[in-house]
Image (cartoon, rainbow, N blue to C red):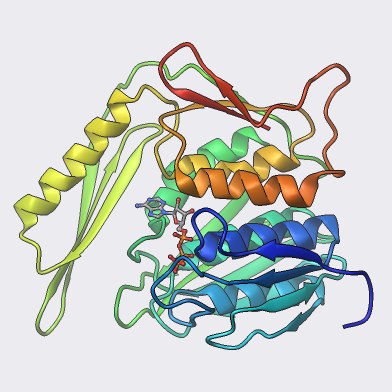
Length: 319
Ligand SMILES: Nc1ncnc2c1ncn2[C@@H]1O[C@H](COP(=O)(O)OP(=O)(O)OP(=O)(O)O)[C@@H](O)[C@H]1O
């Protein structure tokens, strides 16, 4: 591949899953640096790019958003090389052709679309409520309001929901470019004023899938379970909710890793009070540091810490 020498990204580090690929590819696209990712998903029992969980569709979507080139982007690939071009925005269709999560497609494309030359209209197809991924409702009711604090805005039209195993969901996300991402301070939780839940029950020939979705202003958890009795799903959801309430942080265990890329790109220092730092968050921080080292613009006098213990029992993640 012609052009600059790529930055080497070791996909086996820390979590060793698809998130390393998404964070590195998005940042590569935004900062305009080529990457070579090796040991892709080495921490998983089926390493390499998989089509079902959206890894490949996400990579292709980013490539198409910026007119870049991608080498090694095949199912099963343990290594890819990605050379980004300027992010141009416009219309993009990304299709997992499975129940692969549209929310993880959004996770990899949204940061890029924010830095594009023109507005983007992203048609994302797959599962809207997939396991081991943010639920669409989570993206819209938990992630979105917090993302807006960074100045990140997007509109999402839900055309169709899609569930495992068929997929077939479709959302259209409109993103306007942003001049700069603002840093955020999220260190005071405030009072919990309301808790509500939504249950999705999908009847299939032989199994029943239940997704329960519990929402506080800032905390959300979902459980997708085949063949698990509804009362057990309810208990699991409540336990997770209680855990997130007890740790005292301002974001739940999932949101923390999803905010790192915006904290890394923000023009200034962000502070977010969290519960114990997850491995996903440590992973996102690791790759954000690797790819944004000379990209960050810290205000004069601000020292650069990755972690900062807080007094309140939670952990504070800093840009
Ligand atoms: N219940 C949930 N609610 C909100 N977000 C979630 C939930 N479960 C997982 N996530 C988010 O989904 C992402 C999952 O990343 P991860 O790398 O584990 O999955 P993946 O891309 O499917 O890769 P792999 O197939 O290697 O596991 C993380 O950003 C995590 O915070």
